[in-house]
Length: 488
Image (tube, rainbow, N blue to C red; front, side):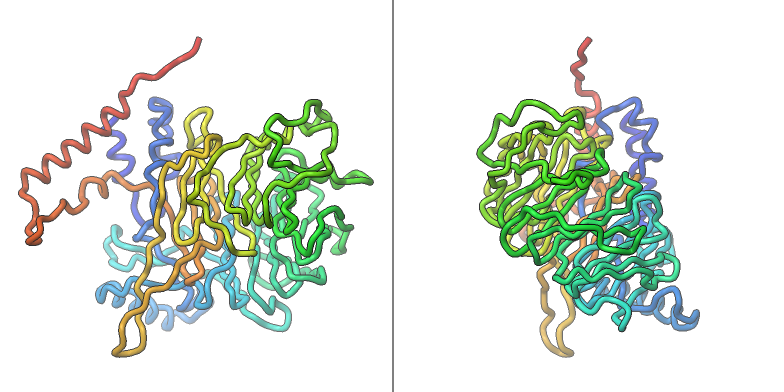
């Protein structure tokens, strides 16, 4: 019964839904605790979901929209399946935390698009073929909007009806999601690499990491710059991230190779730094889960730190740097856990990168799964050990070259990642202008894969195909019936 239920749960997933939501397998999750973990390990880029920002948005006329739809279907018939979200490349991405429905994407051309994941064009009209998303709204370059590439995007923590954007043009802007016009504007006086707003706080402070050693704090309620956090040396702070459990605690990573913690309520706000040579940590706590004694000297990486991500429970934080290392730290003791992620990591761009940690409910008990943007691939790791679970290539679309000339390939480097709330899905943005949805490989796809072909391109006999399907079913059944270890 478990195998049959699994097949039904996966097979009924259509491209128009783009993901397998927890509601689809909640009963199985109760009976088979490892079910969602298996889905997580089956995740891959979907070729059935596309994001096309080269056409018209929802504000276009109906007749023009119909012509665009016809063009999309004609492209499918001609096998021209590559579409771009932003022509100049996608540089930022954010998914709303509440519904997991709306997506923001920022382009290298300063454009911002909003997408509705529940609204898509079915290109084949049969409900089972590829679907294409078009923007439901857009922000293009003007005198009141950004002038240069978008570096970061984020929805407000308590309301997806508003969002923030930052850019190399030195400004942080706030928008109403309904009208997509700037409502607030802050000039921090330097290129902004990243910004962060607390997911739990009501104080609405935005931290900006920019091309200056001090972190700028902007108060959205007073529409004024609050104050600066001074401590980093060097020319820039690249990555900032608020704690998911302590509303006044901020982490920052700078070009000086340090990761620093701050409590913005204090007169002397710096809590301490991380030291990559410390694998024992500092004893003693301040009552908030942080070390009581400050460490003021130490480096987290040999080279700039351009990525920080907190675990959901706030007990660990992950840092990435130009020394091509990923490090996992205990926040209570500032201990380097010495997780070894191997020699595969690549990190050479000064822009902020953001690995993502899968929701704990989707991983096995005691495990954590980290997805790392590694150039034109996504690496899946067991976070606490650094063990590589999967290496997933980003599809390399073939774009048309000049008329009559050869087709050209582009490099789809991953520039941003964001998890889709309430779903087994994440989205990635790419320097070639595309956006990809990553969802679990369905049961139907596993059984309908083309069999291996002989050297003369003849298909394998029908008996071999049936044998392959039977072995697939047996493997699934064996995995679901594995004995579990329980502790009493």
